[in-house]
Image (cartoon, rainbow, N blue to C red; front, side, top):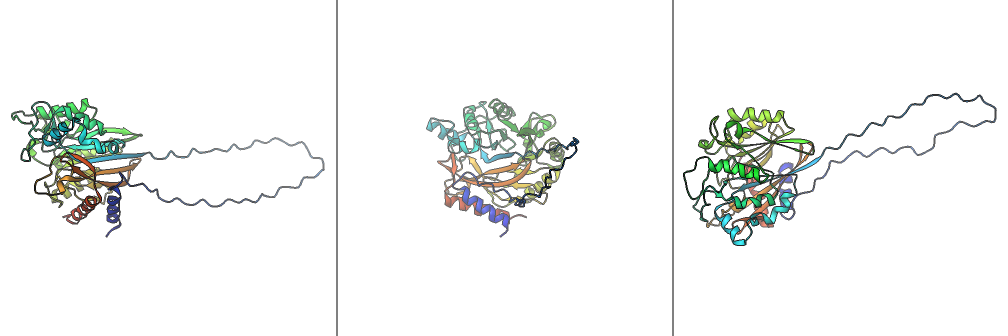
Length: 383
């Protein structure tokens, strides 16, 4: 077992009970001891001496010590949808922010909190019914306060549900554009969709403690939803399209984060396309790649470029507590990433479990162990 994997499993086990592992700074060199004996001084005689001649003395120049690099904490979540059973169950509690209640403090304590919206937020139509077979994931705008309560700053909307319209079909781009406008009105930056291709590929760049961090959202699921130069849609996970966008973001920021929607649903194994795109994104200038869509936790690794890839974080606020008893759709991780300046110095997966089909909480120890095994098995499946 490599050191990287051992540290990952250890971090998962600790994170089951605490929100994050402590950062241990690298040891510093011990300063050498300084001499304590007094230097010999010249003897004083009583013979008369000439008056001393004043001579200019050198003034010591104290160089300012370099400012320490700022520490910045980022928190990433898995897939979120705010309609269907999540909305119905939240209504029953009398508090529409209740899906986020258990982890709101943990998320909002980060400098930036980033999520993946696998659905839409719009009042263009009523949300779909609470049923396992209903796959249209529109949530009403009344659910937005839950996202603000949890402190979300950036949300990728580049998913295969980016145009979901709720119970009544027939809308084309209304819910996609509504979602962007509604998130912005709530103070949350949407990324990965736009009124045209340029808008969908435009990065969100936020400055935190003097460090400029760029975010891009891309979707590799359902090319029919991709934006074109004339039509709204999602940012395409197409190397011919995204390479220039990532390079431009890298030139205008200190750290580039790409949020791809990719992989196979309900699969723990990494796909060849995920690996290929991860390498291409890193080569173009991505420093951190955090994916979603499989609704299942996948591998975390560091590429030869130094870029860190978390292939899928599983579900976060989602209603996939299937009747067949599968655990993996109610498990996920919150990914804690600590920066020192623009350098990634800590990556900690925090295991979570979804309770009552709508509310994530810190995972119990047994579930946390299962999640650690999922990550290891997924990495071993790398093509």
